Length: 99
Image (cartoon, rainbow, N blue to C red; front, top):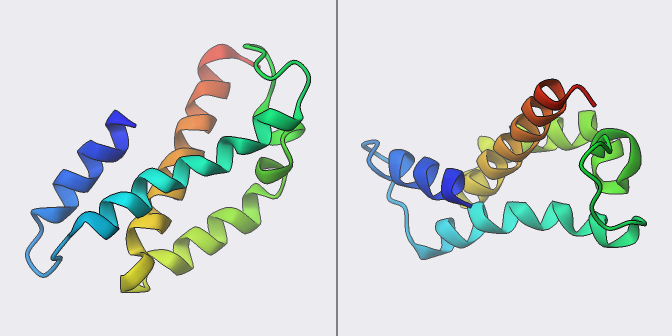
């Protein structure tokens, strides 16, 4: 959440991008992709690879492609940025924890 807010503040200071509360809501709503944790048992396990066990993460290549497309469509650009950031942070977590 803090990362999303930081990215929002950085992007909103770029000339030509007039960010508003709608954009902030989009970048925060990118975390809703983690709702697939509710369908796993146990809901949280520190050594579980999300790209192999959660259904919204299994198709990660399609989600990243969709995120890149959204990145270039201005009304939903912040949603694309948020999704890309989400998957990047999941990847870093997997590499750091050696899951």
